[in-house]
Image (cartoon, rainbow, N blue to C red; front, side, top):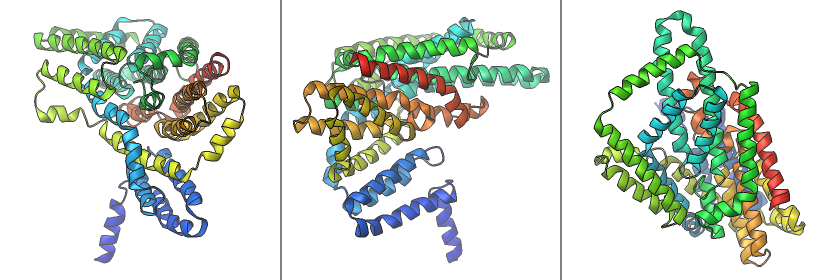
Length: 485
């Protein structure tokens, strides 16, 4: 009986995660108290930090909330961070929490309009280079004002729907296997262009990525101020990204450049015409309302009429009230995508609280401040960029912006130096992180979606297809940090 219960307990512990990973987590939890007794709190805190980063790196095998949360709970029990310290970090990061809770849910209620837009683009444009450029640029434009995960979710919805439509046609005719494979490659390229587009636009504005709001909050920037301060770095980065899209698509490098077969386009166009013919006045009214609400969202953000999360809640109310979504269950579905990451963000804050209380990054910050002012920015850009490629960029930004804010309050930095370093951190956590799926939540979202296996998008294929963007956009960002800030 005991053996049966023990086996069931082990199977339930962290679910389907590999056994070696379960043992690693258990080993870390067992070793930390021993390490604390032998080496003290600072060494143990460094160990906890690396253990937590390891759980972020394993996000595809096991969502980091559970193993990372266990490690964070133990850190609190060991006294490495106090409950008051955790609460203070949560209070500081409350605008980001509200952004994730309400803005992501609000954009969920604009999805019909977004799906309609992307569908028209996909079927009306015949040039493969132009359609790739549009997917990348529209993804970037929307991500500058909307949540990147939601924009990518819309792209996934459109691509999945079209794949299913054509797959049924291809299954009925075996000779279409070659065309189906070509269509898969075409969709794979478009999805990568779109995913990287969310990064291109996401770095530019206060709401483009969660860490942007966190950095803007600490710096005291509103929506327009954030965009203006970031422009010397984001403008060359955006130019580099869009130019890369055109080049790789035209030359067919890194897995891009596969056109949509004409027969596939015909099947999809016929399907889209049938759907449009069956569109009811109610559906048209929903799209119009959502478009108006989206316009109001952009204006509200630009004028900073309220905190971002409050604007998101307004979007939820307006988009549901005028489209007939009044059932609690339908409204609740909008929060499903954001709440797991919101919970993980609170765990981030617990670990960040430990970093602050144990002063783990004080030596590194002292070294950065010992450099010439012109060298400080590139040092922080590089450090945040490297860490963001293997860890979550929100977590990295939370660490570094808190450190330089403390230095500003202590008088070690001037306000001008602080703003330059904040720009470097924001760019470093947004751009180099596209090198691996671990660094970008949007990449992980695409990689773990039901669409990824259909279009044969694997972890290493995503890294390969992101490589030219990583090189060119990072180069553009470095140029901006070195010569334009």
